[in-house]
Amino acid sequence: MTVRYIIGLGNPGPRYASNRHNVGFMFLERFVQKTGCSSNFVRESNYELAKCGGCFLVKPLTYMNVSGQAVKSLMERYSLSAGDIIVVYDDVDLPLGKIRIRQKGSAGGHNGLKSIIEVLGTNEFVRLRIGIGPKPEGADLAEFVLSDFSEEERSVLDKVLDVAVEAVKTILTDGVQKAMSLFNSVEVIV
Image 1 (tube, rainbow, N blue to C red):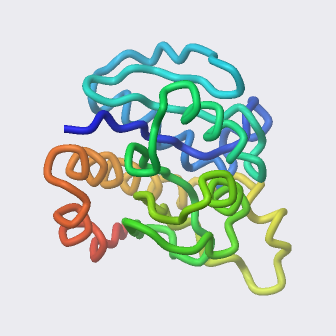
Image 2 (image 1 turned 45 degrees about the vertical axis):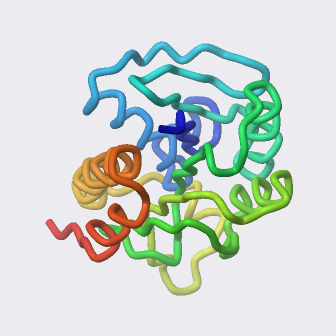
């Protein structure tokens, strides 16, 4: 079985900790809680790394739009291929309460994913999108993704993060096809 590196996308620092754009970091924190593995993230280059059972958790310390720089450093250091990573990130085009797993695809307007695709030279890697949408009509996209969740949205997100953890665990044990069939149709409603 391939050792997987689960990369959660977000922006470093307390200012961004609760932002919609930091769902990837929130996912990693929930993964640690649910699996009981160590949350000892150690800084290496421009990312932090924690071993978690048979996989590694990765937090890029670059800002979201240049996430590819951290992914490139990670991949060079550990001689990884695109098949060794799972990228978890927010998606404004997916409603809050839904997740989507894909084996490949475009960046869909997400600058962090675009940066990773550019650095890797391929879009063929597993990704899990966590819905944060829809963006309110007329709202500025940057302001929306850098805003915090409301209390009501946070209760939905808490359940979604649990589902996302189960989805990634399924990818790790049973493969991406099985995870897609089980989780791509799930919708969390509170």
